[in-house]
Amino acid sequence: IKNALAWLSFLHNPYDTAAFARFIVIPPRGIGKKNLAPILQQNDQHQQGLLQAMHNVLPVLRGKVRSACETLVALFTQWTHDLEKLSLIDFFNLFIHQSGLWAYYTDRDSSENTERALNLSELATSMIHFGQGKNALEDFLQSSMLNTQSEDQNISDDVDKVTLMTVHNAKGLEFRRVILVGMEDGLFPWEDQEEDNLEEERRLFYVALTRAQKLPNTCLLYTSDAADDLI
Image (cartoon, rainbow, N blue to C red; front, side, top):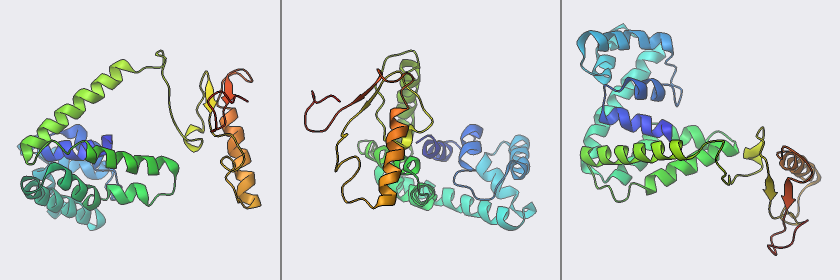
């Protein structure tokens, strides 16, 4: 979500260097830190905004970097017009495809990227009441910033909370207490599995068990049939 918000923040404010530094590399376009130097220098000298600075330095750029910058200038120019004609949610759905963000996450086969693509869909849904135009985008960005700040202030490692996730996404993490649900044949492992897939699910089950920092008393297993069916 933060990557998408960086793009939108820059669309709203082409002087936002933090947003520029974030979106320029996600999805990757072959533009590295070395290539950003003339753009930032142009912006510092003329203070016309980073989008105009990118346009001004196109003659000195070469190859893929120039092509990528030309594409970005054209996209942001077009989005400025689209933003005034479309509702914010329709504009966002157009933007995530034209920017390459949607493909960047959905084309990469991992549960983490699938979750990030779903987060983009949820972000779109949250725009439904914001109308259209630059003012609507500004209101949405302010609302998102307030929500993010509130979450950052209220959630910390010292606060008791429940974190829901798949076993795949839990890899590498540890928790004081872990509760696994749906621990029954036909669900986990899934029914009609090939032997190789069954072995993979055994490994996943071991991963899930060992997310608890102290075994065995901090990992609870439940079947899906009854809340009191504790293993």
